[in-house]
Length: 250
Image 1 (cartoon, rainbow, N blue to C red):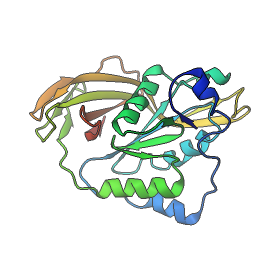
Image 2: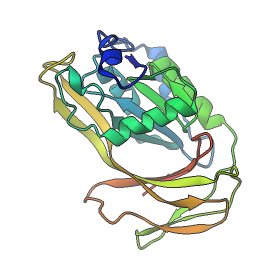
Image 3: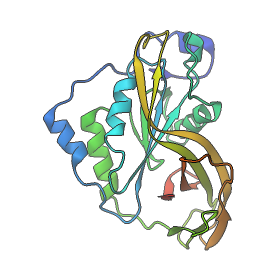
Image 4: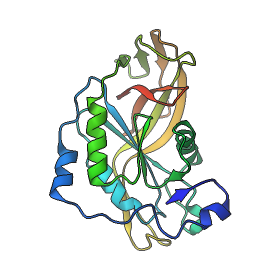
């Protein structure tokens, strides 16, 4: 489903169906996703924007989940809240996740936000993320040459160091993205997915700015309110074009 803005009228005019429906799995498309993607020193960041009220999102969730655990890939799921008015309040959505998707819309000069939508490394959109296009796009990102800053977590677990590197004049912000690894299952009681159990993976719990990076080495403190079992992905993200310059997971 594509949304051009946040007004109820604009959303209601388009909410009859999601951007795509269920797509069958083919052997060829699965092989593309299964190819090794760890072809550069830093990981590819795969950000999925999804909603429990979107009829096509459960299939996209499953496709993105095939990338979880693969070397050289960080998967983050952001449930958005702008489907809630249809009658089912997404149990995992947060307004800041919808706001992040809007930031990408502006940076990538897209006409609208969409669900389901995948953003790769902050600069490339895949919508709809079917098996064929998603696997190919991730492999292409993994093969893309770039110079990423070193990111190293301290043994104490409370700080992270960012090395030197090149960055635009506006600099970059450093984000701590806390996520819950593994699957989360939610039974949806109304809307397009009524009666279905929707499966999510690596669901983001919070996004917290922890500092600024200007290309020089810096040591930053990590959030202290991380629940047991949760993990944190540190993203160095350009303020200019929102491209992710480097990432690591603890």
